[in-house]
Image 1 (cartoon, rainbow, N blue to C red):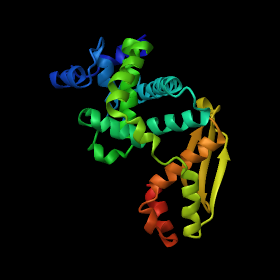
Image 2 (cartoon, helix red, strand yellow):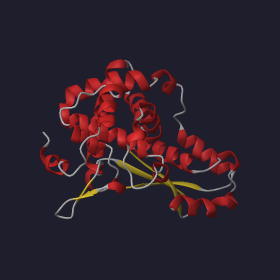
Image 3 (cartoon, rainbow, N blue to C red):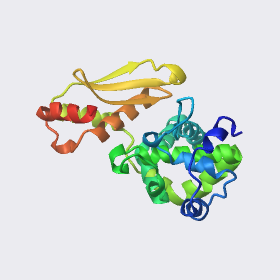
Image 4 (cartoon, rainbow, N blue to C red):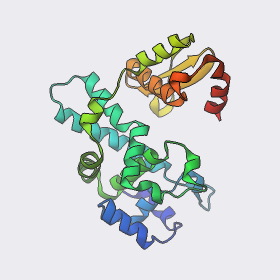
Amino acid sequence: MLGYFTYPFKLLVHPNKEFCAFIRRRLKIVPNHIRLYELAFLHRSASISLPDGSLVNNERLEFLGDAVLDSVIAGHLFRKFPGEQEGFLTQMRSKIVKRSHLGRVAEDMGLMNYIVTQQSIDNYGKHLGGDTLEALIGAHYLDKGYRSTERYILKHILRKYVDLNDLLATETDFKSRMIEWGQKHRLHISFEHKEPSGKERNQHLCVIQVGDVEIGRGKGISKKEAEQKASEDALNNIPEIPDFAPEALEHYVERFNS
């Protein structure tokens, strides 16, 4: 199952005792291949260059872990809420796997202390923790397989760090809030639907614009879900929403695109 990953491991530093203890004692993982877990914490900024010029970092593991996490969460919610319809299950899954929530879970798990970056982790934005958590799940999947990873996610992540009752009570209608914000500040908010490409071509993509300025985007299995995710993204990006004035848009755009 390791395949592509075997050779690059030789280029990573020998695992230190502190990291190994963290994996075993704090995360409750007994690894078969510790190098996989080292790679999960290697940010793109600290990529290792191979002799052929290609770079090794945790992005491939993140991609894999994202898919595994979605699958495990979907199955868990399907079993836990047998009477609920697709819309409810989709919203609950979105709440669990959204970047801001995964980031908080990563912090609670202690992942931030072991991420390898070129500069301080404070320079890499709010997605760093969630991305690393997904890479960790990808590493676990390659190391131990799907069923073991499913049990790990349910027992050591969901049960310990995710409060479903709290998530049930959180806001879900971000689109209405986005529209209300636009009306309050007399700004025209448009929801533009575009066709994703590549591996995401089976999803819907929504881009929210104020005039010609993009302020948020989101993807989903339906147009409605994409609009909600795009609205949530826009609301997270807009600083100090209650006090945000239209004349501040130019400053915001510069900050958003930096």
